[in-house]
Every structure is written in C-alpha cells, then in structure tokens.
Length: 106
Ligand SMILES: [Mg+2]
Image 1 (tube, rainbow, N blue to C red):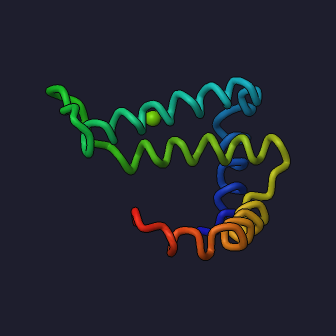
Image 2: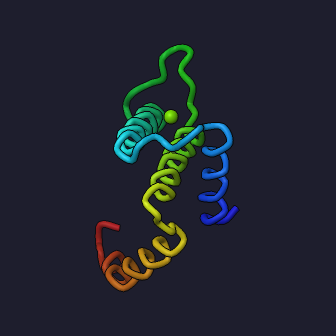
Image 3: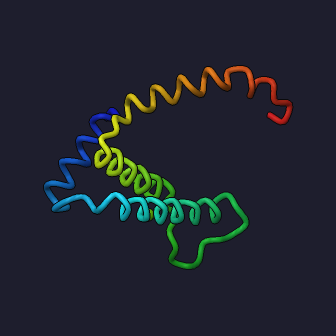
C-alpha cells in the first residue's frame, strides 16, 4: 500500500464507518494520546519498566494507531503526505548527508 492509498483508505473508512472526522484539534489530541501509548510500550520493551500482568506488548498496533491519526490529520488539512515525505527526504539529505557520517558518536 502506498502512502496515497493509505490516505484514501482512511478517508473511505471514515466516511463508511466513522460518520465524519473528529475535528483537527481533537485528532491532534488523539495523536498525542497515541504517541503516549507507543511510548508506554517502548518504555516496557526497551526501557527500564516492565509489563504489568495482562498488559500486551502491542508495539506494531500502537505504531499503526499513530499512523492512522496522522493520516486522518493529513486528509483533514489537505496534505499530500507522499509529496510532503518526498520533499522532507530531500531536505534531510541536503542538510545531513555528511553530518551523521562525520559524527564520532555514531
Ligand atoms: Mg493506541
């Protein structure tokens, strides 16, 4: 699935099952909430915390939750994430193509 197809899939799902998008600000709050849930799993899997009994190590699902809400926000704000990602990659490459290679900490 391409990024464009993912945006279209989310849009179809929202209009089929979700009635309408939550407002942009609500989805911004939901994105923050989902990032927190991802952080919780990361802290338990890779950090010093441990899973409580019954808690699931659902890293992939939490990443998908973050992606879902980001795709919603892209659709709501008229953002073409394919183009945005392409431009962002160009920007990072122009800015950092030597920087990381020259970082002795890496
Ligand atoms: Mg979640």
